[in-house]
Length: 333
Image (cartoon, rainbow, N blue to C red; front, side, top):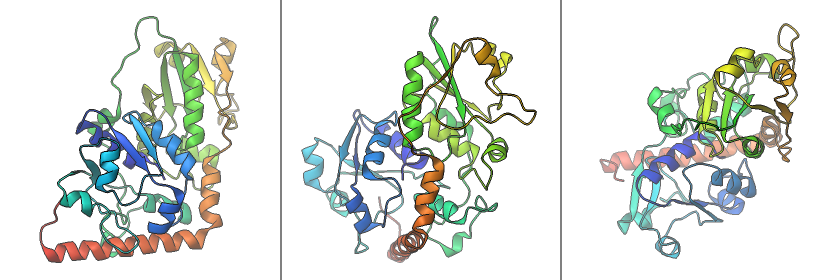
């Protein structure tokens, strides 16, 4: 997948240098070393390019980072999180560049992993955000619930204010399990103005209109996912479902843009976009991408047993390496 934990690693990596190249593995490489990917390689290439700290993407990068790869792209060093990335045989995927002194390490984002998110979709019950037992799992994929802080939000925020005369665009939605459809929509929305504000609905509001046991990701996780996108300047956390006159005036909104998702009336039967429509400041814009959060969940559920085995095998390999490192003494980066 591509989630806000990856974006945070990318943000930290960018702080270590001047130009950041991100290598994205092919589906074949991922299947060999980790198991089936959730997003296909073309989706992942485009999603990583949309992260605001990325300068360049290398498609089909080798899973084992080596010296020839660093040299080919004129990289001084490679960066990874302080969890472990293992090859199919259980060995460290970064050992070669570690031994060469061309490795740097940043902190992984506690409380999120691809394995955890896939697990939520496999479970998809009212308890899928509850804390797991950390003693029974890998320390990297058997995670506790993500806890947002003001510092993390500041780190992800652009900090940019609209300039005088800028045209303000407002969009609102759930943005659950941030994916390519969201990115293409935000890219289209950005063409309607100079400064894009995204309203992210609360978990309660989202559950009311999406039903089932959504959201997959809580509001803080969804906010960071949106903030990492290069087309977004500002996020309203827990935005009201109805776009009111007060909201339009407060943010000086010039255009409200809505995408492919169905527009439901609020609990009082009111069209949430009634005000911008009456002001002539509303437009429907299709993303050109049919992918939805429900489609992603269906990918997981359709191949349920495959993903259960993927998660189990990944955690087993990580746990074995973790125990080995602990027995060997202090962990080295």
